[in-house]
Image (cartoon, rainbow, N blue to C red; front, side, top):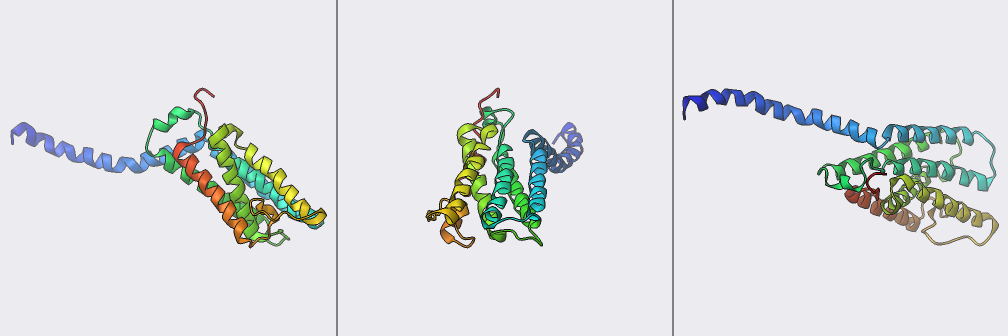
Length: 225
């Protein structure tokens, strides 16, 4: 080993320490930039607004049909807010920009879904929330999955179409319970009892497929949109 090599060895230690200390800071910065680019703060505000709106609405007097339909409206709104965050400002070319993107997409969707479920459930504390926590979790997860599938097919900016469209289907399913022959298919899970296993499995399946597709491939957002 030459004298020149020996002089370079001490300088390598600070560089190694800097590299070891950098990833946590870089990771936090990446999370902040990703959240800002996906409008996550706006989605959190929309979820909070849905929870507040549900709480206020629950103070009113509703008939049996209205009491069942009411939570579904705010669950659809929260699901739409979650799925819109899949929209990418860079479009499909973003898929090749880094190996951490699938994990960021997955973590963001799971965190927002959990936050929405907690907020909507908390809004029903001390009030008559039709279906209870189980119904909130099932409906929210299922409609979020539909929105994610819509994002994969149409793009993140149009992902709201999925939960909004299914809201109409779910409201019709609830309507048939009171004014016609009840729908028995578990794919219209809002019309099924809260502990219906088939309905829970359908909602969970849609959510799982949607989150896997959007985590791996992202939303179908062409470049330049």
